Length: 420
Ligand SMILES: Cc1cc2nc3c(=O)[nH]c(=O)nc-3n(C[C@H](O)[C@H](O)[C@H](O)COP(=O)(O)O)c2cc1C
Ligand code: SF4
Image (tube, rainbow, N blue to C red):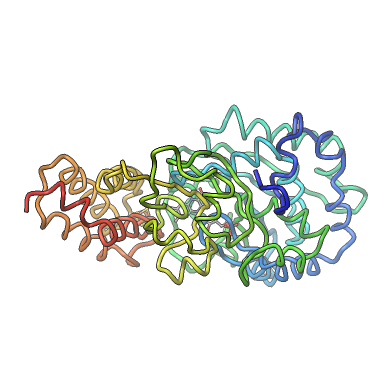
């Protein structure tokens, strides 16, 4: 939860009883009512002004993506929701779907209106069947009964159908083109780009498609009601508007989902929102944006958490999954754990990823078990470097970034485990 005085956009209703119901949401979709009276392009212009950056991982400017889709002349167009949330350490979309599904559904309808889309799919992580999926389905049914979904929404002449699809159970299905393949009924293999999903030939059923994250879309009601300039002003650094839901785990005193302004430092997030480190714990390392991001040392805790600052520091804000680790963690053990995940989840299409992730995992296990040599540590770094920017999708880079950075910043932990 956000601290008193700091803005709450997404978690504003979470402490209310039955926060997931339309009744608690206020019984109405006022932002949708307002949006339906606006020109679709004017909505996109507000999103551009808001500096809303995609919350799925890449931080791509949402307004720019929507303008790409709007410029296409091929119809139908689609808005597809990425609710797959597979990045280790990330659990904030689930919180939105379970606790404020109406904010997300209202944002989704506004987005569809802005893009002239009349059929939308919500691709939700399959494991969320009894929680997030159920809540979103119930919210859609409530919205339909209230006239917000279906034919002639609120008498505007705008029609929209929406379907919730249970994901296929693979991390790679969260990559947007793998997600589209999976939605079309095939194996979740990422597609070669271009064409990009926003362009004709690259999207769902080859039609222009915006793929957006749940949190990205849940911001739309506030942007429409309060304006893009207001939203932009909430962020603490330029070109990063609004707040962010940080999913915090590890050795901080409090863990969970915390809403804080975009660009808050990792130290302020830890001290002001999470109550600092646990009794007896000293901060050693920070995973800043899901397991695919390069690691930070304790000395780097004053870095701002926005997309641009972290990119300039050769890591990434990613999915907003933050893990604070203490002195009890040997980073070679942590890396072995992370590498096992990527080796398991590589789809196998690209040789550097298929072979590289498996090789990294084997070497990290060897080091962790005390069977490694100094050259094995060097090899992990070298293999990771050779996997970068050579593959169809970013999963290989997502494995390489932690591998390289854990060794560069915590070499002593590795050396302590190997024969010199
Ligand atoms: C391996 C991999 C897994 C991903 N998993 C997710 C995910 O679970 N949820 C998500 O929103 N984006 C995920 N992404 C990012 C999506 O490809 C895409 O950038 C995002 O859905 C776009 O939405 P946004 O612009 O609103 O962030 C993943 C990317 C990669 C490379
Ligand atoms: S990088 Fe890895 S996960 Fe992505 S397409 Fe290639 S093999 Fe598949």
